Length: 469
Image (tube, rainbow, N blue to C red):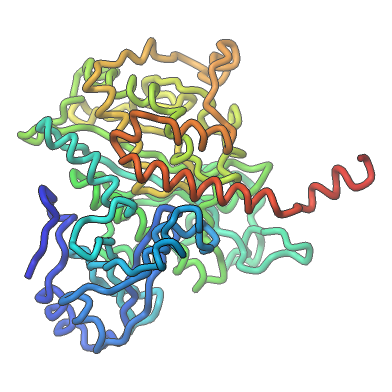
C-alpha cells in the first residue's frame, strides 16, 4: 500500500513494500540498513537494522520516541517542550520516504540507508518534522499555481580528525605531500587535486544515493571546499538531497582521516562557511516567472527579494541557528552583513546572478552551512511567497561595494543569537507559514541550548578575566 499525505507530491509519498522488495532482490550483498531521521537540530538520528528487519519498516513503519523530534544539537532531551516526561516519551511512527532506499558505500559495501519522515500514530504528518514544515510552505505556492525551484550550495572545511596537543582543530595533511595547506588559493586546481581521493568517494556516494552532486571548487580559505547540488523543481527532494549530502560528506571524510565540518566559522582568521540557497519560481506550465532579458529580472523577482528583506530578521534563528553561526558575519569576507540586494554582486545578501534570461533567479547568501537545509528552505520560501503575495518593494539595488554602503547606512543583519531567537518567537508571519507550534518548539529548543551553552566556562574566560577582574 502506498500512502500519500493529503495534497502531497512524490517526495511526500510514503514508500511501499514493493520498493523494499525490489531493492532487496537487486542487492543481496546488503545486510544492514540505517533508518535516518533528521530533526530540527539538523543531526541525523535513527537505528541500524539487520536485513530481516527492513521489510517490516516498509509494511508498518518503525516506532521512534517523540522526544527525538526536539533533542538539542548535543542530543539531550529538552524537557520544556513537553515531549519528554509530560508526554511519557511516547512513540511516534517513522515511515520511509519513497525513492530514498539506497546503498551507503562509505558505511561499507553491505550497508544501505533510508531517509524517514515522522507521523503521528493516527497517520497525521507530525508538525515538528522539518519536512512537513517545508511542505506547509510549498502548499502555499501550489494554491497559487506556482512551483518553487531551489538548489543548495554548501561550503565546508576538511579538518584533521585529530586535534592538536592543546585541543585545537587543524587542517589535514595532504595525502600527496604530507603538508598542511596554508594558502587561500581560491579556485586552485592543485587544492582540488589534493582533495581528489575524498572527492571521488564523495561523488560515488552521491551517485549511489541519487543525490545530484555537481562540481567542486577550492574556496576562499585553505582546506575549504564548495560543491553544488543541482536545482530541483521539487523543493522537498532538494532539501533531502542536501541533508543526505551533508551526512555522506561527513562519513566519507572520516574514512580519509578527516572531519567535514559545516560549522559556520571554524577558524577565526579564515572565511566562514555559508549555505547559499538558489531560488526561482515556475508557473503551472513550468515557465520561470523570474525570466527576463533584463539583468535585474521582472518586477515579481523584486517582490520576492522584498519578502526576503522583510522576513530576514525574523528568520535569522533558522539561517544562523548556533552560537558560532554569528561569528561568520564580517565585512569583506564574502559573508553578508546587511539586508541588501544587487545584480551580479557578491557583496550583498540577495544576489541576482548573471546568466541567460530563462535562468534568472535569486541567490540567498545569508544562511550558514550549519543551518538545517530543510528549515532554511522553508524560511526562504516563506519569504519569497510573502513578498510576491504582498508585492513588497525591496528598494534600490546596490551597485558596487555593498559592505561600504552598508557601513555608511548603518543597516545590518541581526547578529545576536539570543535576540534572533526572541525575534523568531514573536514572528506572526513565520507562525502563519511554518506553524505556530513549530515556532514555539524551535524557540524552546534553542533557548535551552543557549542556557546549556552559557553554563560552560570556556578557556577564553580564564584568558581574559582570571587575573584582570
